[in-house]
Structures are given as C-alpha cells and as structure tokens.
Length: 247
Picture 1: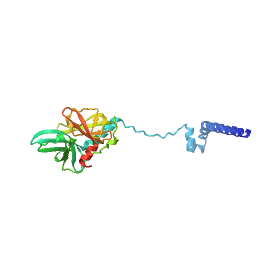
Picture 2: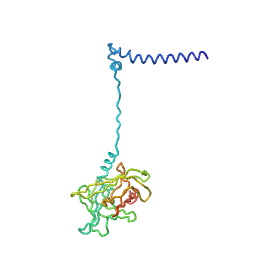
Picture 3: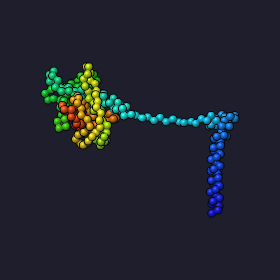
C-alpha cells in the first residue's frame, strides 16, 4: 500500500514539474532562444519570441432566407410561360403555365383553356408561340399544351412526402406590363397537406397566378396554383401533375 502511494506521489510530482517546465519554457526559455542564433531561425521559436499565435481562419457561409428566396425565384423564372386563349381576336382568358419537358410540354390550369377558343398562345423567352392542346383533366383542373420549341429549361418537382407543415412557399406568376411579361410573387407557408390538394395561408388577388407554380425555397415545384375569380387559391400537388403528364 505504501509503495502504491509513493508511486502515485511520484507521478503527481512529475506532472507538476512537467507542467511548470512547459510554462517556464513558453514564457522565458523560448523567447530567450529566439534572440540567440541559430535558434532564432527555427520557425516555432521565432514565433514564440514575437509572441505570435497562428490562427487558421475558417469561413462560415450563412445564407439568409431572402437570398434563398431570390435564388429560388431566379431558378424557376426561365420555366414560366404566359398562356392566353383567344376566340378569333377576342381574349377569353389568360394566366401562367409551366414548362415540364425540354421538347415543349406545358402544364397550366384547365379553366384557362376554353373550349370556345380558336387559338392558344404561349409566351416564352420573348416569343409568342402557338399552343396545341394535348389533353385536359377537368377533375383536377389541369391542361397540357405543346409548343413547337426544343431545348427548353424544365422544372424540378418535389415529392409529397418531402413536404412539411409550416414550410415556406412562394406563389409565382406572370403579368403583362409595358409590352412584356414580368414575374410577380407572394410568400406564405403550407397550412395543410393531403393527396388531393395543398392549402396555404394565402389568397391571391391577381388571377394571372392561375396555372402558375407553387415553389419551395429551393426553387422546386411543390404544386400548381389554381386561382378563382374571387382570389381563392388551392394548389394541386406535384405528384398529381406527374401522374397527369406521365412523368
């Protein structure tokens, strides 16, 4: 027992002496050696003499919500189109659509595609293109048009299982202003989720958002906005759009 205690005391003594030695070396011995050639040429001794501590900086990138929203809107903008239905030269309806495939498939709200129309126009990248009706889904209020253009930008669709209550979302549409179509947005959150329709905490007074996308903060399409004449909004989830166009 006495031997064990003696060993413990010896170990404690060594630790104390070693610690004091380190402090003395750092505070006195190394600064002194830094003034004596050739020790002064040794890097860590020279730095100790100068009282220099090297800190390796780390860069922390913080993306604010506003920056993320701007990036999301910029990402979706090239995929937006304006849609108009005409009977002869009379405008029947207009709203927004979304490019779904690079070879010209465009999805929009079915109530924008009037059966009385003699022509559908799709405005993309400053061009006016004729839209051909491919099909309609009146139950979900979806319509699919085709335009004769290729190499088009396309959207990314989210999966319903990835959505969360309270998730930040953006309504986006196109409006006509001074001879061109400009995007407009509205911000909100997801209030309710089910397989048939998404509810958000927004109404949208601008009916031109009808047929436009609801996107998340990554610029991915959460669903398609349907806006009635009262400004009431509902959103068809992205999985319904996938089923409709067989993606």
